[in-house]
Every structure is written in structure tokens, then in C-alpha cells.
Amino acid sequence: MNTPGRHLWVVALAAAAAGSAAHAAAASRSATETAQAQPTLAERKAAARSTAAHNPYCQDIQPFYWSVGDSSGVKVDGREGVGAPLAQTPLSIASASKMVYGTYAVEQMNGVVSKQAASYLNFTSGYTEFDLCLQNQTVAECQSFHQGPINNGGYVEAHKGKFFYSGGHMQKQAVVIGLGPDDNAALAAHVNGLLGTHFDYSQPQLAGGGVSTAANYGRMLQKIVSGELKMKGLLGTSKVCTNPLTCAKALATPIPTDESWNYSLGHWVEDDPVVGDGAYSSAGAFGFYPWIEAKKRWWGVVARESTDGLNDDDSHRHPGVRSAYCGRQIRAAWMDGVPR
Image (cartoon, rainbow, N blue to C red; front, side, top):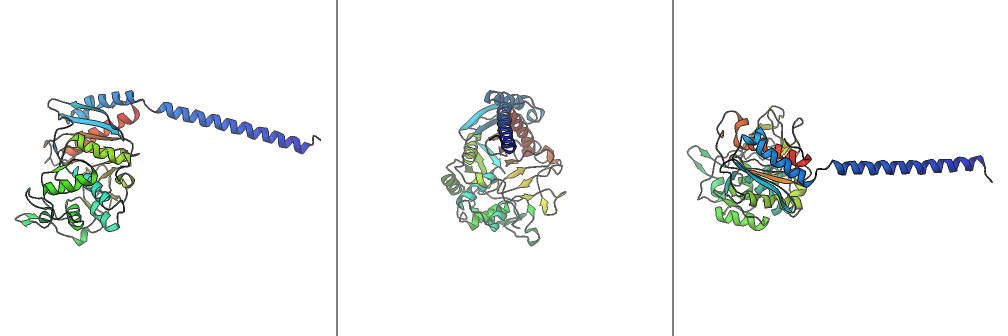
């Protein structure tokens, strides 16, 4: 019998089915539009090449080598300017060594980073007294070195729990975890043996003594984004604010204070609320700039070795900062396929 109740039930069922179909169609359109919005590999390559060659921030730092890759390896690279280094040119990577050591330490701890261990890696341990290492020292000899104006290894209670950019944190932790007896060769052997990489050291300083090529450094970044190294899951963790103008727990930073980045386990998090894109990076004083983008799929390197602007009072002119500005433009172009 065709009752009014049954009729209403049939109508409601039909309406629900129509609604489900409409929802499925909308979802399909959304997925299609999302897929269409993603640039092709050719578009990404063209945008990155154009940006590296013509963007003012990149023209400012010539000559340099650059690359972008993923978990399978390099997808595009290039050389800009006369005398630009090659992918295999050894360069002093300075503070780009920090990401190397952070990655090593995380691997050595099997991905389990205690609060104390994190404080060494995000520069809040209080071990802020540090100047430099001598080439023929061991890690431990450098950590405790006192001579003339050089005063390494000092702990400052007032700095505990506050961000202070210094190599002293990593030098102290390296001694704690057993690297103290290592000279340059032994240190490289320990790092490379665990990471499956090829880095050298010009001095036994964990935070700044590394020597690498863009190709070798890129292989470490490739291992991170592939998940082969445990750092992938820890990128951006235990991060702390770093800008003394906006953060009461920040004491010293090399980043211009018109941007506010965070610092994690041996790497920066470029998450300034205005211009940041969330990338993980580790710019070196001489302009070597490695990065991994926020979603941990793509990585890149801007490779050069320059002292131009190194001692400038304006930190915007420091080589590492200038390379970061160029690398940021290449990264943006790669991500959306639009030249900058």
C-alpha cells in the first residue's frame, strides 16, 4: 500500500542519493582542480632556471651553483655567473655543518631526543662561550681550549633555556656523546659512517668546520626526505624562537631581526609570519645554503664560498643571508612553477 509515510521516505532517499552524487561530483572536481593546479616537472624546471638566472637576489650572489631534488635525486641544477662552482667543487660550508651534525646526532640517538639533548641542538643549553677550533685539535681539545682571547667551553647559567647562536652547544654535546677523541679525519669517519655520506672537516668544530660539495650535501638531504635518515620525522621539532626583538627567550641570532625564524635540531625553520614558507635550512657564513621545503618532499642547495659582506654591519649583506634570499626565490618558483 502506497502510504504518505512511505512516499516521504522514498523522496528523502532519492534526495539523499542525489546529494551524495552531487557531493561526489564536487569532490571529483576539487581533486581534478587540485591536480591541475600542480605544475608539471617541465614548468618547475623552467621556473627555477629563470629565477636562478634573472632574479635580483640571485644575480646579487653570482657566481654560484644550485640544485633542486627529491627522494630520487637531483631534478634540476645549474651554474650562474662566471667561475661558478660545480656540483663536485669542495667548499667550506661553515654553519651548514650544523644540519649535518644535527642529523648525525639524531641518528646516533636512534631518533629519540631527550630534553637535554635537544637543548644542545636548538642552542638553549647555556654552553655559549665558544670562539674557534685549531686545525690539529681533537673535538675535546677544542671544546676546552683557552688561549689569549679564545675562550671555549664556558657555561653561562643566565643563558640556559634561552636561544644563543653559538657553536659551543654542539661542541659540548659532541664530547658528551663520545666524539671527544676525534681529530678531523676520525670525526669525518664517524659522521660519514653513520649517515652514509661524504663530508670532510677543516677543523674539528661540529657547528662550522665542515667541507662538502653540493652533490654530497644534496645526497644527505635526499636521504632525509626519503625517510632513510630519522631527521625527517624530527624536522622542526623542539623549535625555539630566535629574534631578540620579538622573543624574550632569544639572546643572539645571525638572522636580520626584521624576520622572525625559529630554530630546531641543528636547523632553522623559516616560518616568519609575514614572509616565511616553513622551510628547514642551515645557511653557512660563506653562502652555502641547503634547504628542505615545509612538506619535506623537495630539497635544494645554493652552493658558493664568498666573504663578500661577511663583516658588514648590516646582516642583510652577510653571504649566508643573501644566499637564503636567493634560495627562497628558487624554492618558491619550483613549488608553483612561476618564475620569480
